[in-house]
Each structure stands twice: as C-alpha cells, then as structure tokens.
Amino acid sequence: MSRLAVVDGAKLHAHWNQGFVWFALMALLLFGALFPFAGFYTLLLVVTLTSGAHSPRREIVGLLCVASVIVIGPLLALKLPLDNGGNDKIQYLDFMRTMGASGITHYMVSQPEVLSFSTLYLAWTLFGPTDFAFLFIFGLSFSLLLIAVWRIEYRAIPLFFLLFTSSAAFYNSYGNVIRQAMAFPFMFLLFSCSKSRGRLAFVLLAGLAHLPSLLIGAPYVAYRLFRKWAVWASIVVAGAILFVSSYNMQALSSMSGNDGYMSKKIGLYSAWDSYSVATVAAVATAIFIINNVVWKKLKVKISAAKDRGAGVVEALWVASNFAFLSMVATYNLSKVFERVYIYFFSISLVYLSVAISRSRRGPEKTLVLIGAMAYSTYGLMKNLQLGDLLFAGDPIGYLTASFLDLYRNFI
Image 1 (tube, rainbow, N blue to C red):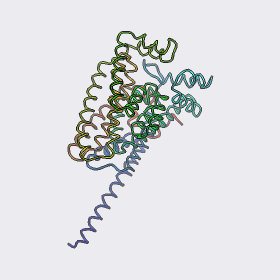
Image 2: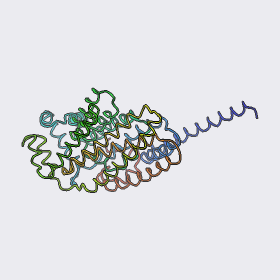
Image 3: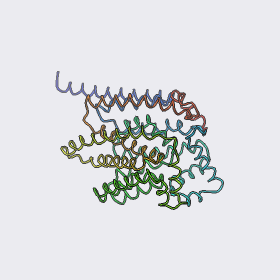
Image 4: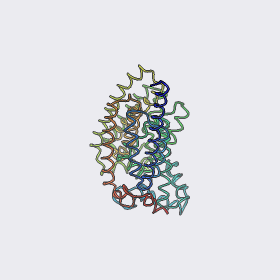
C-alpha cells in the first residue's frame, strides 16, 4: 500500500470520526429539546468522562454553559414561596414588594449590600415580584460565575458544574441566599486577577453583594500585599473572634454599636440554634486536608514543569485556606459559619476541578472522574428529593419535563 493511500485513509477516518461526533451531538440536541435536563446532563457526563483522555473542545464547553443557564434556571426560579423554616425566597419577595411601594432608598442607606439590592430592584423593575424576576437573577449571577471560572480554566467547568449542582451549597446559594450567589463571580475574578487595583475592586464588589464574602476576600487581598504577615495576622484575628464569641457574644456586638447593622446581624446569627455545625466542621476539615495534600503534590509538579498557569491554582489554594480559617473564627456564629462554609466548599470545588483538569491524562484520571460522576449523580438525586419546594413543588418531575414544561409558568 502506497504512503499516499495510507495518508488518505487516515484523513477519511478522521473526517468520519468528526462527522460521527457532530451527528451524535445533533441527536443529543434533538433529544434535549424533548427532555432538556436529560439531554443536558447526558452531554455533561460524556464531556466529563472523555476529559480523562483529551481536553474538551471550547465549543462544547460553551454549549454546556449556555444550556446550564437555560435548563437549570426554572428549577430554582419556580421554587415555591412557602415557609418551611428556611426559605429566603419569601424574604426576597418582601424586599421587592417594599421596593415597589417605597423605592430602593431605604435599603441603600440601611445596609451595605447595595449591589445585591440594586440587582433585586432591577429584577423587580423589569418583571415585578414574580418567578421571572428570580429567573433573571439566576441567569445573570450564574452566567457571571461561569465566565469567572472560564477565565481560570475552561476545562474545569464540566467537572465543577457536575460537582457543584450535586451539592447543598448550590441550592443554598442560588436557590436560597441569592445575595451570596451574586458575590461568587467577583470572588473568583478576585482569585484570577494579578493586579492590585483589580483585586481591590473585586473584593469590594463581592462585599457589596454579600458582606460575609469579606471574611475570605479581605485576608486574601492582604496576603497578596503582605504575604506571611497577613497569614499570622489572620490567625491572631480568627483566634480572637473565636475566643470572644465563645465567652462574650455581646462584646462583638458592641464593636459596631448597639444599634448598628453588624450588631443586629451578630445578634441574629448567634441566636440561631437550628443549624448544627459539628458535622459540617468535620467535612470541612477533611476537605481542608485534601486540598493541602493535593497542593503538596501539585507544587512539586509545577516547580518541575515551570507551569506559567500555576499562579491561579495557588491563588485558589490560598483562598480555600483563608476560607477555612474564617470558618474557625465564626464557629460560634452558626449562620455566618454556614455562609463561610458555602464559600469554602465552592472555592474548594473550583480548586480541585482545576487541579484534576490540569492533571496528566490516563486511567487514574479517568477513575477519579468516574468516581466524581457517581457521587454527583447520587448527590443530585438526594438534593432534589430534599428540595421539595423546587420546580413548583415537583423537583422529581423536573427530570423528565419537556422544554415547554420548564417554561410554561413563565409564559
């Protein structure tokens, strides 16, 4: 057989493979039109699994990002506004109605989270106190998060999305404490930013969206300026807060005045007894250990390979450690602890997803991905069963809903 014939055969085989891939993709899109979530999740699993052998194409990851906003949005936006002991949608609807009656001025002067309340006001202005307003907020905040993660490492998005949407952190933020979800994009833009002014801008924006984000963002920015001195200072401050909150909670309140915004928040969070932190603290400690073991191995490989993109991996590792330190500091403030844990967990997911996506391809990586896929599928089903208010009270029906079913209530 001539050399030319071999080359032509290889080209034909490559074209056939490429054609088959696009045919399969079109078939999956057609299936996705009938069963949006099933089609989207199947593609997500396939892309995640095959990333163990080769890097996913940017076009496919971009398609996943767009599909995720379209498909996941109704699940959260159609959450029933019923009081089950922890449904913040009721509170956000009240915010919108108050804005409709008396404007936004009251919120602008009475609390510091002006960015998140401005977004609520914009959603109310466009759509009123409706589910469509929450769909708009999700689409905006989640799209910005995906852009921020893409800037860090686009190859990590499929695995990150798979793990994130199977966790309670996703539903407790984007489906409940929406202000925290609004801070996520600025947090991750902060970690990928290499300029001091940019870092200051992003940490400020994150704080204006959700004040507790400063518990991670502020020490991170200080670390970039002062290095080890910021670490020691953060440890001392965390220890002081933990000590004072253990014995004299009122001392924390008095720091901001008895009638101050922080005083009221501390009083609310310290009086909240329904949230048990012991189990979460144990899980967080395990993740903290894993993060540092992974970094110890990565650091050796990065030094040997002189990887130019290693800076953002280190930034995520540093941020996860500061988030864990903030959890230690707020251990006695159960609701603050819960919020900080969500930041810690989310940062850790991005960090580990980036680390795995940048690791050497092979059987070991594929096995890790298979394990992550199995865990994520289980976690997704568990959270849908627990989230009985999601998708108008039918979260299991969401799995097989058609595209029309997803958006029927918005028409």
